[in-house]
Image (cartoon, rainbow, N blue to C red; front, side, top):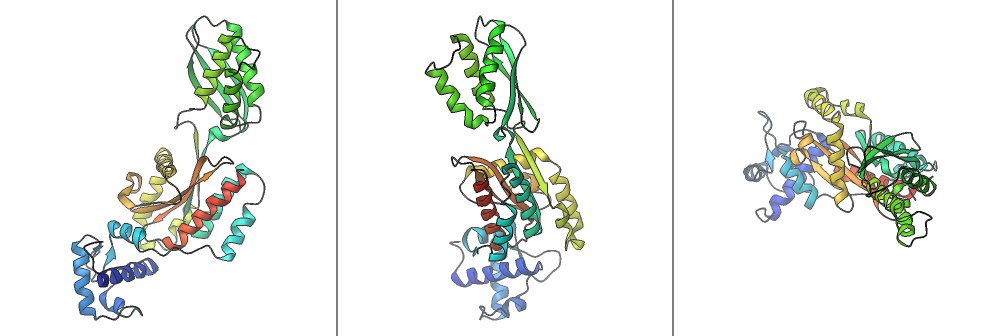
Amino acid sequence: MRDIDERSRLLFKELVETYLDTGEPVGSRTLSRRDSVDVSPATIRNVMADLTELGLLEAPHTSAGRQPTERGLRLFVDGMLEVGQPTPDERRVLEEQSSNGDPQGALDHAAGMLSGLTRMASLVMASKGDRPLKHLEFVRLDEARALAVIVDEAGDVENRLIDLPLGLPATALIEAANYLNAQLAGRTLRDAQALILKEIETRQTQLDDLTAELARRGIVELSQLPQTGGRQLIVRGQSNLLEGAQDDLQRVQQLFDELERKEGLLDLLEAARDGEGVRIFIGAENQLFSLSGSSVVAAPYRDADRNIIGVLGVVGPTRLNYGRVIPLVDYTAELVTRMMR
């Protein structure tokens, strides 16, 4: 930005906004007709040439017009974008659809709402470990190891290998599992962990030392389930990506292929948990969407203790209405957070 004077900054902002609105490269004559632009087409052409040299604009094919590069879009989003608020009608739709009182259903609703309002594909990542639990048991493998098997209320099963305390009798596995099942029933691992560890540390349980140690190891290990097995992904509205894409079907097909890479999507959404508020990934900034040149707008949602437990967002072409999409994603994440309390 230090290499751009005020006039170039204004013209760059006007060009990007025009491009995002029309989807077409912007020529100097078109830009000169904007109400806020009072310089000649010749001056605009000179500024556009300078911005192209800086890597902020590019000329697609043989077009005389210019459009922002991914670097230019990042500059625009970070320093020039004017973000609005969801309209009253959008807020009403979002609030009505999220008021069914079912936390798990809220995730499906969130995905459907975002894809419908933004006309893009929506993504929701949730942690399976945040579901209420149904049953846990220990299966002994040898003298030193056991397999902890946990089943949640949706019927999904997670396994975790744990080390056994030395000299642990076979009955201890049953006793430890019975104790944990009594504490975990209807709770998530996150909710139950602190209670169980406190009871074990303060010797409030009826378990002997070895069995209590097994229970402690079990709850600690299960609370650190592998990322690959502890996450679920909801994708909705892929068909929206076909709208208006007749001239760019190859890019859309590439995007469809990228959306099939579930683990890559989960890793991308996991990255959105690292910061506060909305995160924006533009084109090659994320390896998953480097070929299709797509953007992701994502925001985390939280539980009653304000812990981040998942991420939701949308994916579409880099030429999306960031000023409208960002507040929609942010507000939907806020509504889902309320549902998780």
